[in-house]
Length: 71
View: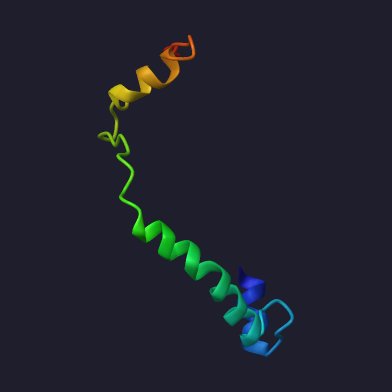
């Protein structure tokens, strides 16, 4: 990170994309972002910090015949 900032301050652009490359990258990425935004959010099983995790975690591995091991 330090080298990247130093290169930028010294005018060394070898590690940076040209503006036409940035534009081309956004043309590729934007349809993906728009498709993600158009989908409803996934019901992700969040849980409180310092807890044992969501109840769904038990079902997730139980369906494959596994169980959590307390260490």
